[in-house]
Each structure stands twice: as C-alpha cells, then as structure tokens.
Length: 115
Image 1 (cartoon, rainbow, N blue to C red):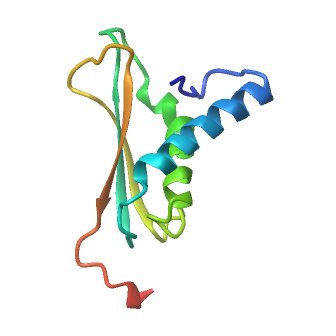
Image 2: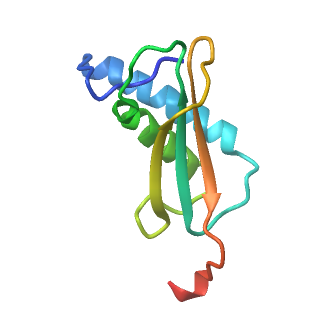
C-alpha cells in the first residue's frame, strides 16, 4: 500500500484516495479489538532498504490509520484526552516493500470514571 509523506504534494484527489485506503485498512485490521480508554500509540516503520529516512514524514499516514482505528470503535476519539502520546520510530530491520505497523498500547491504571 502506498503511504503518504509530508514532503509529497500530490493532487488533492490522489491524496484523498490514499488517505481513504489507509483509513479503511486500519479500520478493518482493528476490528475485534476491545474498546480502550487512554492509549499510547507507537508507529514503527520498517523500511525496504538501508537508505537514510526521516520517519516523521510518514505522520500523515499514521494520522489516517489512527482515524481508522477510531472508526472501528477501538478509541472514542483521537484527541489528547484518549491518545496520551504518539511515537514514531524506525524498525530494527528491513522488510521488503516496507511496512508501517501501528501499535496501540493501553495506559495502565486508567479509570474512565475520572474523566
């Protein structure tokens, strides 16, 4: 799947199509995960090769994926009330074709009645 890069400036229709595909994939992949309260999100990009990369440029793709996770009902919202941190890192090995993994880590000892 093609990812969105903050440095790219494609036509709005191409960007919208890519965004919709990432969001739909994340929605489908997160179905079945129970509803969570506060979480930390870690996005790990496994590059296809050893070239130098600025992983933070993939934030638009991660944002679309998080929106898909919200769409599936895993999170009530992606505001800072529920997503307490977002970390973007490069994976420790390469994967042919590249891969973006979005990990949802529940914040322990969270009592929803506090909010």
